[in-house]
Image 1: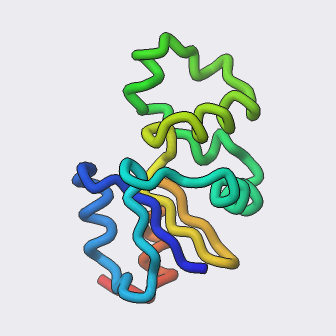
Image 2 (image 1 turned 90 degrees about the vertical axis):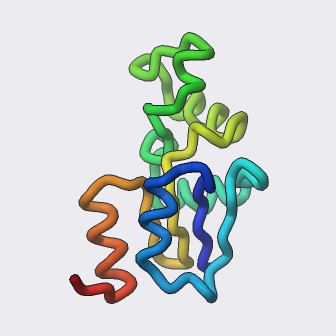
Length: 118
């Protein structure tokens, strides 16, 4: 399995994806085709945390009046299944590894995974 979950309207996602050869990867635009319950379970299996997959920058948090600090694992899971913007992105998922989000450390790990050298 080689899947990338991303948002087409996200400049950061597009910039990260552009760095890699993804011709044998399944690209999933999460607005058009959100992650399934099974895919979310596969992500959870690797991260051991729904919170690690959860974007605390989602505009839905404010719109819904949520307090991200008071959410528990079950809440994170339910919200991730409920609306695509709650998924931290991009997510690169393979049989053995997962790379979640766009922070510098994660992007560096992705570059190493793909063998991209500056």
